[in-house]
Amino acid sequence: MKRILVVDDDPSMRSLLQRALRLAGYSVEALDSGEECLRRLEADLPDLLILDLMMPRLDGVGVLERMDRQGIRLKTLILSAKDEEESRPEDLKKAAAYLAKPMPMTALMDTVRGLLGEGRPARG
Image 1: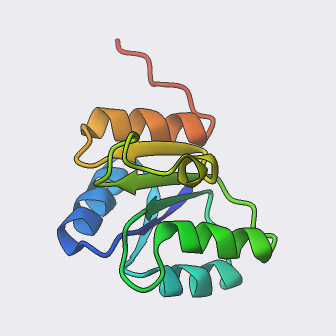
Image 2 (image 1 turned 90 degrees about the vertical axis):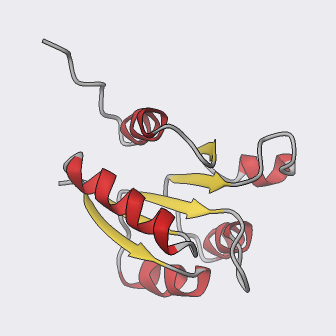
């Protein structure tokens, strides 16, 4: 079972992501801060990190920068209330993918499957 770490300071978004990903068959851990994320990554790496861009104290870009300095290589999907035009180009380059919130769950699931190297299930 693929493991996904969700980091978002918004409890309702964190809960929504956790439920949707679990229903899709993933093992999901959800945290509410960049600091917690880095501590968790020191212990074990998931298959995918879903990371909110705008969080207090240590934001998503700060988490990615620290991961880079520590040599942590991990596929990361950035989620943000900012759209791509508002985000700095360097923010987007630090992640494997970017989705603006709110996003359709189909877009989230398609992106997650793509990042994890899974094809879309055939409809029958």
